[in-house]
Amino acid sequence: MRIVGGKFRGKKLLLPVDKRIRPTSDRTREALFNILAHDGGMRSEFGALPHNARVLDVFAGTGALGLEALSREAKHVTFIDNHPQSLKLIKENVQNISATGAADMLNRDGAKPGIAGEPYDLILLDPPYQGGLVTPCIKGLLAGNWLKPAAVMVVELAAKEAFTAPDTLDLLKERTYGAARLLFFKLR
Image (cartoon, rainbow, N blue to C red; front, side, top):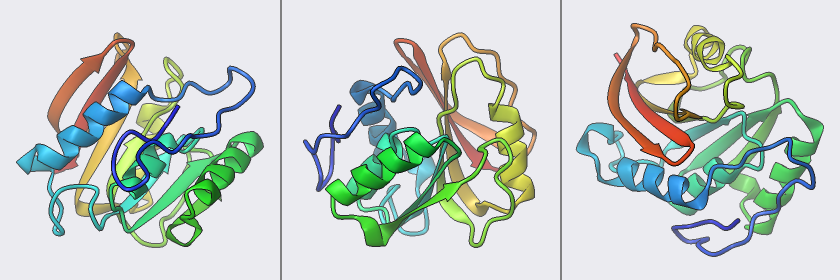
């Protein structure tokens, strides 16, 4: 698995030795970031996302989504995961692209993220498929003030996984890529 775009394009990402993590495929990551970059409804105050944005990668796993954001000029990425092996893997992947100053890791349960120190422009959620974690995570992020007023949230689910978004989010776009479904939301 490699970073598919931006200044770190082609850099290999370290993967876990077990099957505990399901990284987002290269094709899906490329599609996700192309949509963010070219859809006018998903722009931040700085222009096309993730350029100059504060990004939150929840259920980070290998860190592939957040690292892709860093490669595409995100200002800062915070990775949230609660598995020690994932946090170690993310740290190694961040070091391998020499981005330690632009990233931090929080050892937290993605479904209970707590209170944010500062809100984010772009939130990337990639929980285990069919785990029922998306709704508690979104509720926790909203309650903890993790989202800036015009924040964009991208949720990756299994293609046929049921999900009803909270009333506080507007669905901007939905796309399916093989086993993955991407939902793009904006805070109402």
